[in-house]
Amino acid sequence: MLFDALTRDELAHIVDLQLALLEQRLAVRRISIDVTDAARTWLAETGYDPAYGARPLRRLVQSAIGDPLARLLISGEVADGGSVTVDLGEGGLVLTR
Image 1 (cartoon, rainbow, N blue to C red):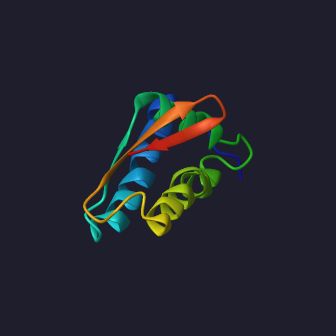
Image 2 (image 1 turned 90 degrees about the vertical axis):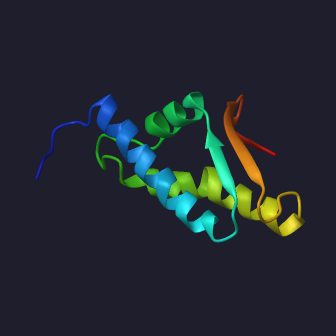
């Protein structure tokens, strides 16, 4: 079955939904994330595949934000109640405290 290609607005909405799910998981530890517009655009463009739609986006959010954030938590660089900014760097997304 073929579906119509997703619009930019639809992709942006899906990015917002995936980030909201991540924020819900972080709320238990009172950790907030601020994702810049550039990072959101990168997620939408990189996480979209014409053959699979936005399905790869969930994995991308986990690998580009969730996994690096987990490493920051384990190392103690980010503590409960902290905040993290996600921005677009030269090689992809960059997380800063």
